[in-house]
Image (cartoon, rainbow, N blue to C red; front, side):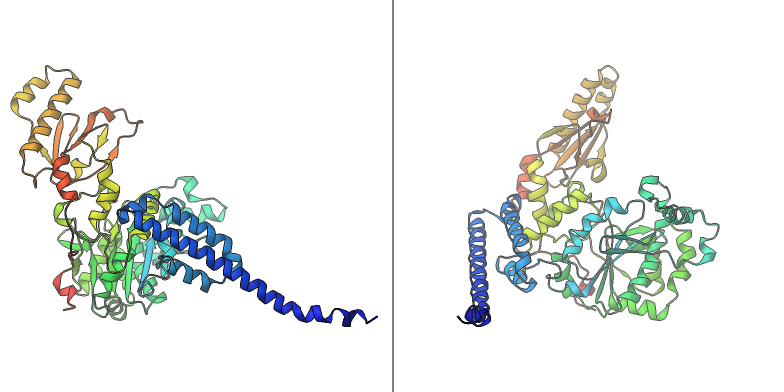
Length: 495
């Protein structure tokens, strides 16, 4: 009988070939599985009447993500990326958006609100943003994300004896004892916030000096990167550009920070080379100012850099609070503000499904998906945002005289009838919706959804909103052949 080591040598020599055959079979069945997923996607797209309908039926995406998770352990990242590209997710995973590496997304928050506002960005905004920085008023770590202290270089002269920094010092003390500011309910975040912007600007330049563009937003902001990046590709980053939704205080035009503002490489380089100690020079102005974005406007003014207005593309509200105007319906939307975490999540899912090469996501798309399906002729206990966007209509004298003799419910009904009739008698471009709040009538030439008044409010029955649906149908059916750009001509053509 042959020795054992020679008896089994044939089988030992064949093991590598058996392993290769097993790997080949595994790859083949994985490929078959992916082909099945791809066919399901194509079938889903063929039966869907529109891109918006796809958003409402995300079952397929869920199945894809389940399958990817199952196969992660046996397939390389290269294979996974290729698969996502094959099935249409060209912007997934992180960093796949063309030009995203050229933009630094800078998010500002505060320690007292960090865990409420920032985590949603870690699974949405930052998921396809390879270049970002996070700033707060205290250095912290959330999982793998580092949040920097924007205020650790504030001069002692400004901080000492300054009540604005009481929160900053209290936070340090409490955190050294293992306490969290969000549970202690410390006050003073707004007063502290105004010192951050100028220091964030310098820190960002120091850490990312080679970026083409710098986008500064708040933690309750959302940026539609699939729209922003094509916009920026048409501009010259070497020029001194400062862009955002304009606010005016004391004759100073500045870009509102929550809506977001963009600074070009050329502008950042000019300021930081000409004035490397800029934050300390403007700290006293921050102390005497209302807000940090205004101080950035003062910095730009001091260096001769004018604000390029980006309204309506940079929008100061979220979908339910936006006043949709017919003239803006075909405009691309880039940023939104005052967004709740749930709204940011919904918007991220919406963007991922609708974004396509050479196709901007428009106000029309937001309106069709988030607003129009919820509009009605009449909604009780509903704030339609007309008081914010619209105008007050004075009640006629005869109605004012009747008010004293009527019960509360009768008063509201009379005012409602008057308000509705007033809106109907206005031209189509003058009134789309109206609202009665207690005994006050307000009308609006645009369209806003607003919110249902919470049941915890005792005055909720004083709110009632209405929409002229026939007029709104015409807006919904508008055709947007070519998105309009509202960037100033001198910016578009790089003058």
